[in-house]
Image (cartoon, rainbow, N blue to C red; front, side):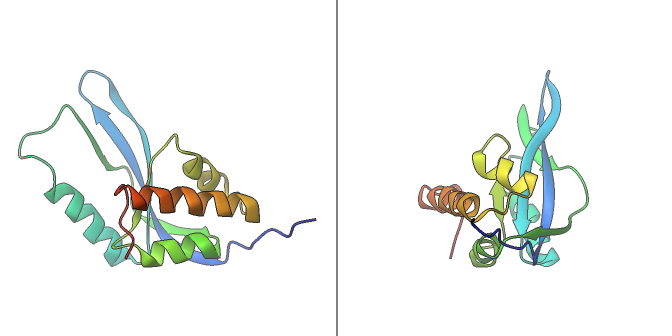
Length: 126
């Protein structure tokens, strides 16, 4: 029997929603941050990268950030990120994080998926 890892590591979680003209608003994933300041910086950098005019489709924070328990491996990835990791809804990593799946095999898959996103420039790891 494989022992599950504990969720003893705390990060800051920010939920996101997508707004699309003519369609409405729907959940758009989460971002995970080492500190509240990292979360604020992540959000500021996101808004600074947006055009001056409101685009037809964009993401935005959907609530206040809050503490969130993760596994040691996911915590290590968050700590190594520039200001946080964005995990989009619909990815396997999102589903595992959202469900609190802390089985070691699932944790390896989440880590591999987030590392792959880093390699193709979807997330920034130091």
